[in-house]
Image 1 (cartoon, helix red, strand yellow):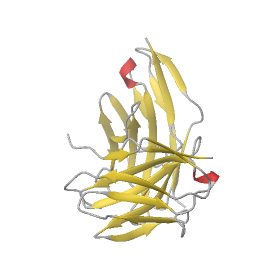
Image 2: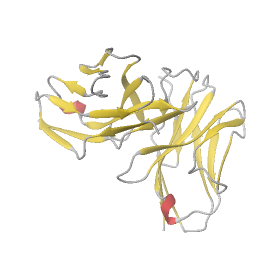
Image 3: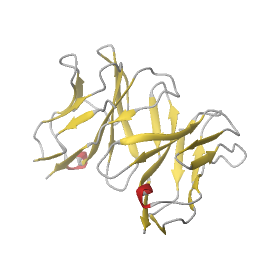
Image 4: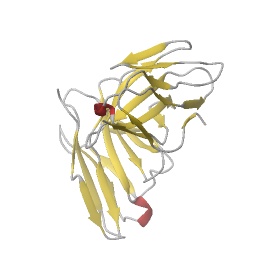
Length: 115
Length: 111
């Protein structure tokens, strides 16, 4: 069964550094998402992306964050200047349609640790 | 805003025991409701859903009934197996594109 793949599985970075988290969504999916989960807290929506544009973003997704689909397969999340509070598990997800009942397919996540 | 609340803390139980994980929601109207599961080392995956009040979602022996009177969508399984050990997330859609998740409950099934 096709999967969403994320790399790396664990990224350690120093405060102030830029990080890029990578995702390869399922190939025929059109809608892409990033979520994150800070340890002990809820899984939070960051951003949704469709047709090479951000379709919705949360209040968390400030100017330090950006997303890109640089080619036909990758979907990346960039954090320009990481802060300690960016430490979290970041999940990429995709789905075929944006209908409410259409399930999200998640990757295994990237654990980001900012020191 | 729309949100879900899951009971606090991990759940540890023996094989063949009955499992209940509580989920209550706050929403305008009657949104679809979901349970997602995350097995060790894997991403979240949809376990079951209910699209309207009084619907029962079911999959892999798990069930959840959408109860608007109590604004709840509790997850149940009559006889758990070690392979059910995972983290379970309740969720509902809000906005145009978002899912609001609960904190998740770690379930550990002991043989």
